[in-house]
Image 1 (cartoon, chains in turn brown, yellow):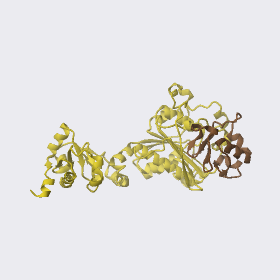
Image 2: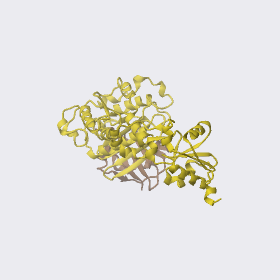
Image 3: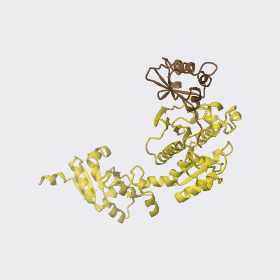
Image 4: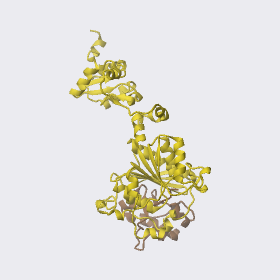
Length: 91
Length: 386
């Protein structure tokens, strides 16, 4: 199953899990699977129209899904889907 | 005629004046048959360094044309004669050695490319740098000439500033309006217990000046805003972003793209760190990576959060490494790449970052954006109060 990497800011909604294995054949299905398991991640990942929130970067392995097929991008079992938030901490 | 005489027949010894004349008048391949540290001190203009021990391996790459007129020199003319004969044996057809070498050349008053002057103290202090062929005396002179501005003299800024100061960065600007607090000392290693209550820029200055008197420290005891950022960063070659809030990060990005200044940007949170190097128009900018800031609940900078002190050191030193590479023009900076570090798993992950063709800051319409809109997000600052 594909692995979703959960950033620190979302771990409060995944019972602290840093990686979650979720079934799915597209990035969208995998992320929906994550939300199915941890509903509170949903409002931070998805906008009201069902698309990704603009402040959320999602990577399939090392590539931004925005330059692939977005949520329609195909995913295989060995892939990693990474949710990447901007971080500002420097102090 | 003995066989070896035939082989060496095409090697002449010429005087420095003859060599100089040939170099002025025609296309000549000029080979420096000495060691890197000798080359760094002074060499002939156009001289290609091929140390004697490396001739067999490197000459065909560095001087591939065996029919070209090839002049070899060394310090006094001995090593160059050996090297010239070696070249002739390898099939180089028209080889000469400069009698008396670069010493005689300089005696005759002919020009050399001399290393930028380092004082005896500097030669000693930076000897571990100048021994590196990638740095050398010339590279160290570039570091001593460089002007680097650090946003934040805190977690990231502390280790970055310490190592940049040790490396001999000539001018280090520090932007911070905060004072040293005892809760800073778990990671902000440029400060110390006695300095609690002092300004961070002043405390950092004391540490830097004690470490390296070559460094000029400039303190900016204020927060950057739209009214002061352009004039503040204009005087610097490279900006290091260790800011603790999104408005400053976006403001810096927009202003640095406008003034075409590279930014080395890192951030840390708990056990995680991110770093990338944004070189305007060569790679993506911060807004290409993060088009809009996250809302407060996803922006932990809006409140106090835990961070492993070591994370500041790891990411701050990666920033210092990027700065030094940019100054020296060596290696591969993190342009178009975002490097993630997870301390708990001790894992580095690299992601690709691409330029956004519609980026409002570095895209085709960038020049039309008025200065008053740099760093602006209409709805943002109101609810993140930074």
